[in-house]
Image (cartoon, rainbow, N blue to C red; front, side, top):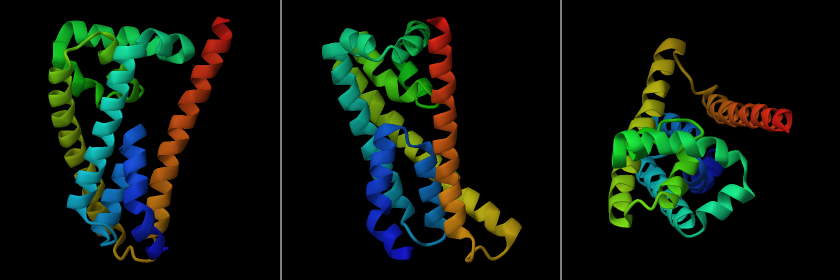
Length: 188
């Protein structure tokens, strides 16, 4: 298991951060506390994945935003929320949407669709991804320290706990998708 974490931990974190990321980053922070991964490298990898995901989605939204929304109607639900945040907070909405489940992934495309200036978006997205990766990575690290203090010696449970954290994140995401699809079917 240690070899698996060492070989695939950072690439999995990068991919997870590119897509959504919180559960991957918290699990990686926990594994850093246990000595399997390096916290500073986790923060860099998560920041890079999240930033590249944001940039790709921003330019996709800027170029093909209306087509993306029509092709993926579930995004249409989140667009008005992102637009309200943008109208109310301007460019600072980039920071807010980073922590709102369901909006983080799509919001970069929405900001592109709203024609936010690229220079502003790129800079604020970079800072937002950096702050997010530091906070979430350290949250996972502190979670590991707190859990260790509560349970005592975690050596025999640490891999199971990391898998449970990731599985819990995937389960929450899946349940939200199922609920959303049922609402869409009900709307007709």
